[in-house]
Length: 259
Ligand SMILES: [Zn+2]
Image 1 (cartoon, rainbow, N blue to C red):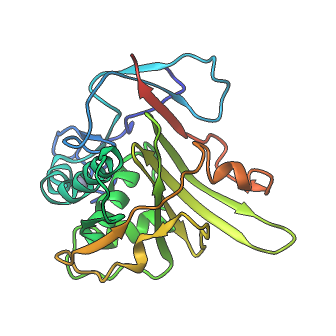
Image 2 (cartoon, rainbow, N blue to C red):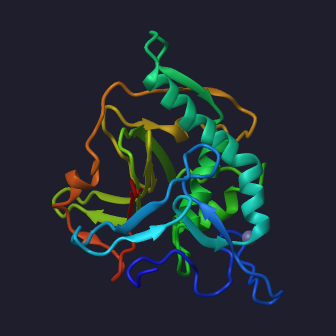
């Protein structure tokens, strides 16, 4: 595995429950992003997203994955939340491939979907993670009574590209309007998701999933399938000119099937 792409935590602290598994002599387990079950687990080639594309690719067998969760958190995620997450991706894919005229929505569970998404975004972090989004994620995911902070917004749009892009948290600042955009993203075929903190992502074919969330894991809703597509690097290409505050070593990832 190349130095430039890190997919494991160096210690044994679970990103979700924060238990140090070194104390009980256990290893962390691998979390697939997107989760197993919904996607084909091909061998992937992955690289850092913001660097020259000629740099070495890291080859990863059986899909993109991160060794950052303890086995308890990983199996809770897999047995419940991932089912909703995968069904949503599979249903949107079926909708897009179908030749029959259909209503432009799929039925899904918004609260479960948000929880699965937040957990997998947290799982992609290979270093200490304690941002506001991380903290809210930990409070929310495995507690069926928890109320998601109104500062967290989750959005999705169509992503018809055969790759997975993970953009870690970034903060953009517009010095003229004073507007801030605090955002992290997980894009994978056929849906891209963004999570923002105290900021709004307002584009015509971007749907706000948190508007449907009633903090009820059993709640089922119709999730609109947007009509139009955006480019692979949407929306970062549109805000690129804004000054950006990032950590010194961003670990944005671009992964696509090897063949
Ligand atoms: Zn854990």
